[in-house]
Length: 117
Image 1: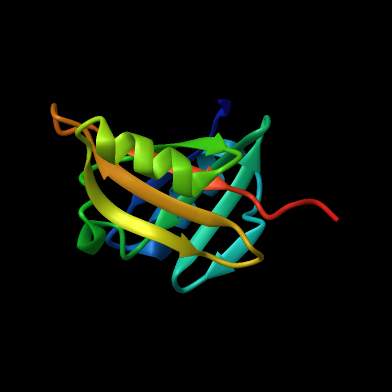
Image 2: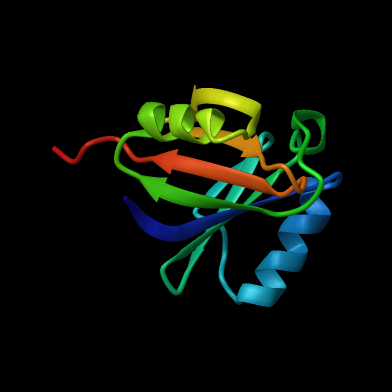
């Protein structure tokens, strides 16, 4: 089961330029502004900019499904024929992400937030 699509990450070549564009589009400043990632929160949606995305195999924006158990979800996707792109990785604060490619070349991201305390 998922909590839906709540995150989309764009691979970008020029993070400063992309940050300016999304700041203009969303009308807000980013909540995360690092050399390796810029993140915005708008209307319940998390929008990220990843300057290393192209090197990770991202060919366009990747939607991330929020799941409660990333390892079992990833195993299920792989068993169903998905090709792994990014293994489970902690991207900070206990947030875990992974991504796969389906048989049609579509990129699918999965994300598990750290348990609430």
